[in-house]
Image (cartoon, rainbow, N blue to C red; front, top):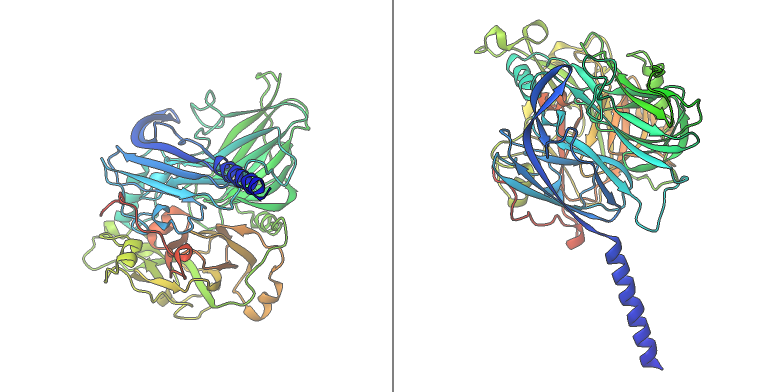
Length: 565
């Protein structure tokens, strides 16, 4: 009898093992980085693409799956790929930012990114993390619930990824290289795109406008991703309400809205029900521009939501989008974000940090001609956090230097608060504060440390809404506001019950946001503004998170094919 029971239990245990192993899969993909002729806005240029596709391939996985993506670089530029929002627990070597977690993949070389999706569901994305290559090297990363589980909302009839992008007629690498050479701001883009297409409102673009089909009465899950290089974007669908159900691969308490705002790097999942007259309706996006007097691309990209059996002769209806500088709409939208359920937010804080984020001006070096100092009043544009303008190393990656104990690559004295306290959002900031110090400073966190970071915008040069992205972590946004953060007054207003869990926070223009997380992922993790011009100017820092105790709290060993510098 006992033998039979033991045998039955063994069979049951084996079936459990086999079921769990059959649920989680290992997916293998090849990404070939290559030049591909791409025609947009009546002009053809060679763009850097993945597998000849623009945008690149959409990867669809289940929560729990492992991805192995071999990247073959057949282009003329160094490249890396970042899996934006993936937690990368103990797999920092696969995170992707150039000279942070790896040296770049040189032309003619390859590297395999290996990582597992753990406890994340929803919409993320992947993109190049080297120079301005992400202008065309990007795609959606869709994480479905584990087989057998479901969405925390009624299953939609359809799902569509809508990736918002930014297009230059010129080579984007040339655009940023020219700006670095001259010290001026880079030239603005020529168009925005939805799934790589500008849409009807641009020249030579009507035939390729993206069409999203739907039947009357159906509900569609739209997975909206802002992959634009430098521009926060408003998004709307004419005559249709959008029910927000998730963002950055975390579920939210549903709320309805007519307009979304996404900073670069952010994703938002919305449900749209086809409850209008069966016609054609524009899906549209255009700039949210918070920096005063800064040039920006003021065009509008469109796709078409097309009901079944609709004739294409009738022109689509255009949505009403907010004014370019409508910060009130942005504020009321962002304050509706709450986690689906009550969450455990760190209440006791071990590392209480205050980081200013903003622009700056470098005085023109004496040996530079005027042509290299075309920023404001003969200066060069720069940017910083806590007055440190971040400089990436070039001989080693930061993670390699940390892992191998290589001295002289970085220091761990990034300041926990600004070196000088001032009226951060005032109008009379001393010019002495405009020029930051260039260096490679990291902030060291012990494993398990409970961290709070106040992100404070400054009015140096101009205030602006900065989308701040933290690699290797999600964080709770417990508060945001305008003016200078006041701990005595503002802390009492924090949401410590159901704050949203994000990987990118839009720090309000002339304001602040406060995030909290537990440092439970060892490695070197970049935190930076996702306006790519700002990261190039130095608006970044990195956390060095120590190993904990035992294998499960320790960074994995570097892979054998890790690129060398």
